[in-house]
Length: 417
Picture (cartoon, rainbow, N blue to C red):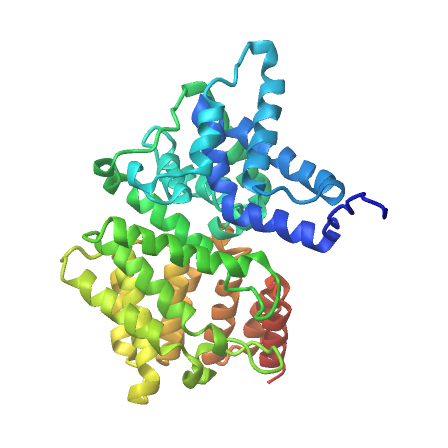
């Protein structure tokens, strides 16, 4: 008789293990944190336990193989970490089996919000949480951005943002803010913070290089997906429609943003034939639907600005007067450093370099010191006013603040040209 021993299934290679762990982190992080925090509302402890579970997966799975249900394994491991961490407080795990069961057999019909990541974002927009930390909290906890990425979006240092997030989580725990999914009628008052977080996450994909494995690129798809869920959930909210339209306009141009050699291509030089027409048509439809609801807001205005840009290849000219009007309207609805810099860029493009300089120099120096678009626009405005030395200084600062190598190479060519 031959050897009857069963040959064990081969253990996946390291690359496959890492790919599975990273995939689980991207797809399930927010949902798993929500399930862990549902028990006692301790967001920080839930995040720590889940991080330890991911680390454990990288150690255990290479020898034992990838479990049939990676999410359940991660949740169980994180749950055990929580139990061990709180054992001296007699925190029990009663109810966790039910949570596991619900995770394995979810029933979207029983949940007011069909996507658990989106649901947890609305939780983070709780009125009891300080308003200026709600969006950063969503970006870190649900969408997985680190403090440096979030800090860049809010023009503060990573240390400052990290401290704010730690303090916010401590306040949430101390105040006993329950991580309860809000009812549908409570969503409108929390919507603005959620929309801002989705758009901030989308913005991190701008510097991702086509063809790379940068996880930021997948955030664009994630953000668009979450916006679609929002629109289906709240079809009468014009700002949800406006945000989805805005992101579709921008995402439609991604194939034209990088040349065949990987070089960065600015909007004015892009090959419009590479733009995704279906996304642009959908965006136009969404913007029309939003306008019929007669409640104008920031994201509708920004989408309208993008609509003008995509019409330029069709008409053969850019309607700069309309762009200026929309930028001025945006400043009345949502003044921000980015909005002022974009407005100055429009003025400069219209041949009003001096007016652009006036807008830029009116901004607080501490707010723009590390904001790369400010220095690029300032350099262009100085060049328009034949202020060569000042333009060179601003361009050097812009190049120094540019992390993307392709964009940096483009700016270097601009400087030499």
